[in-house]
Amino acid sequence: MSNSKDFLLIVEDEEAIGEGLLYNFEAEGFEVILLSNGYEALEFIKINFEKISTIILDLMLPQLDGYEILKKTRILAERIPILVLSAKSLENDRIKAFELGADDYVTKPFNLSEIILRVKRLVQRKKWYKTEIALTPRAFGNTIFDMERLTITRNDGIVHRISPTEGLLVQVFLENANKILTRNDLLHKVWQYDAIIETRTVDVFVGKLRKYIEKNPAKPEFIHSVRGVGYTYIPLKEV
Image (cartoon, rainbow, N blue to C red; front, side):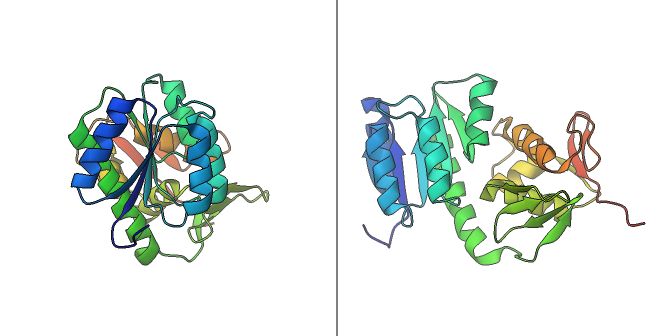
């Protein structure tokens, strides 16, 4: 496996879709492996996870479904960007994938240019994460956020392990405390997407952070919704 190119693993059992993605991503300069079997994909990830730049993952696969691959991959490698590409379009499917560690979610049928853009952004974010993140633990609400270890520790001692995407979202809130951030602001700063791409991804990820740091996520003290606009993070007031 060459180190000169970004390496993309595509896990897709629909032959036409898989072959189309393989051809187009190779044309974009990626080194690509296409697998159609869930079990084979997981075995490949176990051996090669340190070399994989990004994974495109279908959910409905033979032998082992995408949800199980997500769960097991996150135990092995928390920082591989994973984009779910699935015909499952219900909000519960999207939320479940994000809860298990997906970084992004696109439903079929899809726009090829959008998929290419999203994967390139995930690869760029992974490279940026390696070189430019602030590693000093910081207060986040009533918790301690540690970007290096990818953890949020509550004052009752409960530790939540988080994904790199969740970590980047926390970073953005901390760097823009008391400022109103639109959903498009967050898409650009965290996912590096243009505003023209519509997604509810931001809302789902904010909901996850609230579960980690709020006593009552339905009545947040720290991450507040700004109706029709986006969100604002209000730090804990010093007494």
